Image (cartoon, rainbow, N blue to C red; front, side):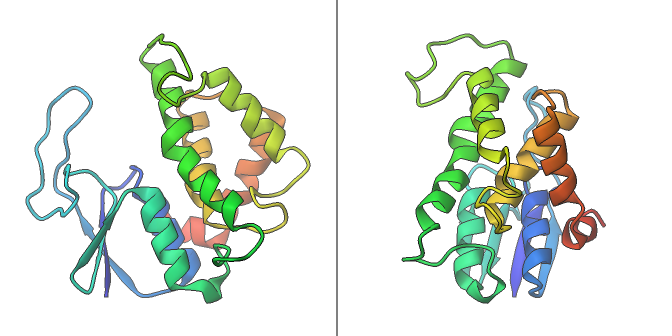
Length: 195
């Protein structure tokens, strides 16, 4: 059985959405507490994530943590769902790149903006938030999904992040991004994940 250690309205919501898209059996264990940005909160002793964060997924005695790693793990485990290109398929490299982009570039850029952190972008592998917005808008202009005509877990991981960041005013809403977010959040599995 797949068990997702989850906290509603957090990064782990993307994995709930992915599991709904995959249509595989799973259970969620709501994490009782996590550390908050202000330093409050505590660690749930039942949460297997090494830092007490979410998401963390357990299956057959093994733990996978971090959104992109879990997305890759699940799409490789259930390739018949078609939510991630298989090893050797032409779009595999692009798919892996976008999965890594969410936590490696996109989130740091908009967190830096939110916290008003000014630093030398590029020095830490990050990019300025305005540049990230330009890249995302340019990439999605004229294509329905991150991999072109193919919806994938990249749309859940990165697209879900875009949708969240626009809602919380961390990112500028453009016509391109508004249409894209409406397209991905209109999916039945997204709606099921909200329940």
